Image (cartoon, rainbow, N blue to C red; front, side, top):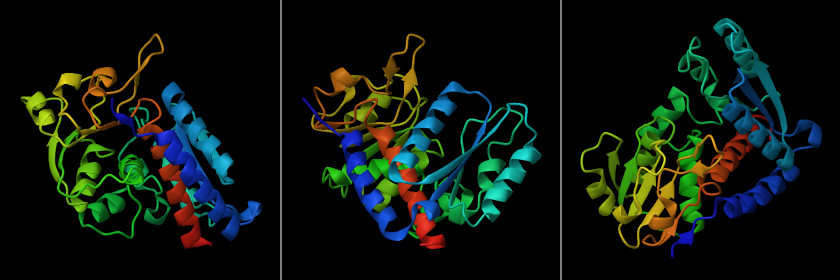
Length: 283
């Protein structure tokens, strides 16, 4: 049976480190401040924002949610992002995705000032990642995955890594990060031919396809490391990852649970990068 890569436990350790740093550098009135742009009533988005705000409170951060109706005009959201950019007491800004279709889901996140982009998804952050620059924020989920693997002393150098998914949020950036750690990376997706054959040779498998139980347990190479970034809730409330967990856990050496694996690491990484922004601006 595989060892669980426990994101909750790893996040808890990082929370203690962050709280200590906050107390050392800030007063409660001057604590790091996270500003969230939320549009509409998407239940999943609202849940994600609540989770992030609860964590911010737990760590002693200040936070503000700017919640707009679903039919808000783009110029109104742009003006709020500009105000956050200009506010010296706002250290980090993130735009919760997805956005209603009439809004530009590329332009709005990219309006965030690069030095306040704690979500790590602006063109500036992605360009820095591509160029191998280390003085920039990184996309939270991929950075969280790397931190989780490091917490378990998993050496990445020389591994044959397979990434399933090519999104700008997870698939593309995690492939770049793994290469920076000297893994050999193959990128796949839901239309890859012979996907099972690619999976079967992976020492490290990272799945972020958004397709419940896409990867079957008997595809997994014995002794592999399996990181499941998928999260799908069915109408009956059951949560599924992109990997058939029960079967995969019989073959893998390490595996992330869903929930409790990658999710907590994404949230704590956002908090860590918010702290880094606050220290750069005001610490």
